[in-house]
Length: 311
Image 1 (cartoon, rainbow, N blue to C red):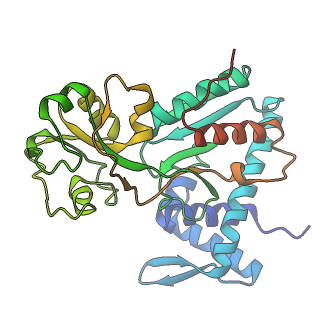
Image 2: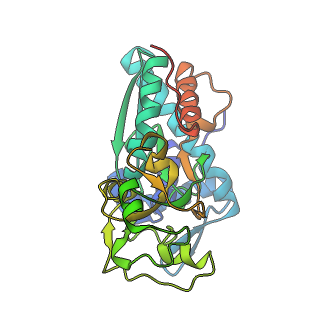
């Protein structure tokens, strides 16, 4: 078999994930010059340029784009096989990494259903912000919004949400709200702040504009929450009206404490994804039952609401 140097492949894969030789060097415990030298060695071996180098920045070439997903998959499979030999058993634990907004209403029900379906399978759920290092942290499946941090890694779309206005039934009755919410005071609006990494989340200004209403609410007068889960909890506690994704709000499970005020909704600009090359792999003897576990979990994540099988 004609194989490239393993260290060179590791340097290439880490550089693509981090976007720089320096960050890859920190992960690999070597110097940036050593990483650059390994990649040059790989390019010479393959006879192809893998990066465009310009003004202290690097961009993948077509050859680099072709090589990266296969390299990630292969290194991951080698790691899994090594772990199997060292543990002297087939791996029986999945590591799922998720953003906060997907943890309670998406990840938790799916993991609970997996526990019933596969009672001997261990599952670890980690809640963390993007980006995460799937290989270094040995993460099997990453649940997140959009794919901007993982453009070169295989993925599967889980669902695409719509944001819709909701509040407690008591507050809806008290405010006597009409479907356009044109007369609702700014003080009664709950705003969701997704943080500095996201600019495409739905806002009240966008929701009003989608109805042809020229209104930009003053966010300093209403409530503001760092995440949909907290904002929905405020709405359930009669604190105001929230614009939130129906699925992540858990509306179907909160009909006594949450009421949809208007059927007018706006679609989030990006879907939610499951990130991880093992989910996409179609034929890999190394993965065995492990691949089946991942696929079962992904199918549960796509289902809403999750139907819990009988124990």
